[in-house]
Image (cartoon, rainbow over all chains, first blue to last red; front, side, top):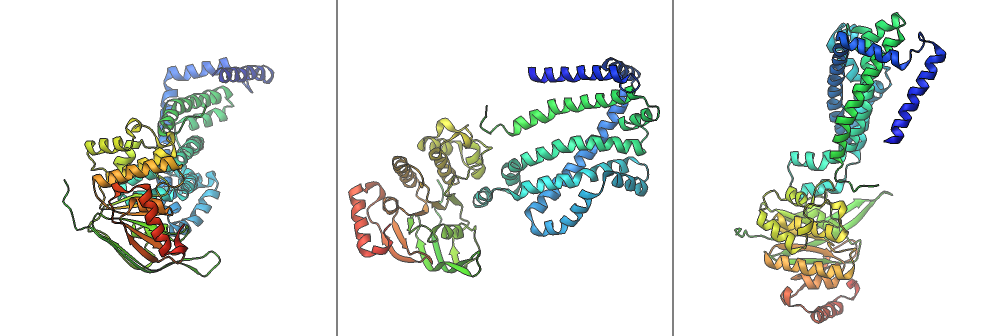
Length: 246
Length: 243
């Protein structure tokens, strides 16, 4: 914990030093950014924009994880599903995020559905690849055990399969959450009238570095809270059976 | 009390082979027949690699790629103890047993855990146990389903002799308390003679039954000397299969 605080303090010191040499137009100092955050917060804009962006992140993340996990599981368990799905997967994996976003806006209009679909489509192939790996490495011995003791379909899923997939789902969720929020900002910039991405787009046109940093840092703080109070406790709960290593 | 169904196991396998990695096929079992009457304990003895585990997997319904027939007890519930304990590492011992046997009563579970010396471990996770304890949990799980047919695949292998002997006694105790048709695979002839009512001697691959030896004396009355006598009888019958 102490090491983390020292490291954070060093980052802020480096920022001050950088701000001193670069000047306030290129890099405002931490104080100025904090003030800008406070201003945006007092007008209420900050919370509206953060809330809207968070909602988009949550929705597209949930859709991408649900579809990605289901398809990844199917492809990991069935050779046929893997053969059928793999070419699509390769195409999606290698299609640049920007192309998916632009096409979604052209085909579906500048709508909320297009924005969320574009973000989800960017995340789905990565979730598929991770979960497929997990489904391929399921323990056959435990599967046979469940079979001879005639465990029901739901019990097998919950007590035999999901705990084995948990590390893969956690990895997909971790990398997915950070990827999704980065892409959501691009989507907002290109075709939404609000959200953190939209505000950063406006600030870019005015070369307002203070505002850009204010919104970026505020959102990073939100994600940090989610990580600390949601993701980590969940991981601890899921891995409670593992013998502790120092 | 459970109503006794006419339980019986009847196995007739004409042919079972694997396709080898190098091409061609490898004959594992050929012309093997065996049957067990209600409540009988049978032991399959044979050299390692002779196809005993394959036979058990066929009977358990895990391998359907064979020529022949397997007749299980009607609506038979299976209790299986695999060579490895195969416990769910993310569930406690009690949850492991209850997941396989959802209908088990608290009293039965208490009795089982007590008999196998697991009472103080019920809320532990399998990763916190020694192999000996984990094997006992696997035994408890197989008994908890109140099986019509119990299949045991070398349940005491890779345990030290003293522990294997103790677990063997515990198993004898459990089988005597509630008779259940049981098929045990082992490469240890003494173990087979100590536990079984009927010993099936198998040849090396392809496996088939070369001798079926009934053992008259009840399980609880078999001293090491008597086991040695039966062993000598079997040895004189079939020199090549003694292991």
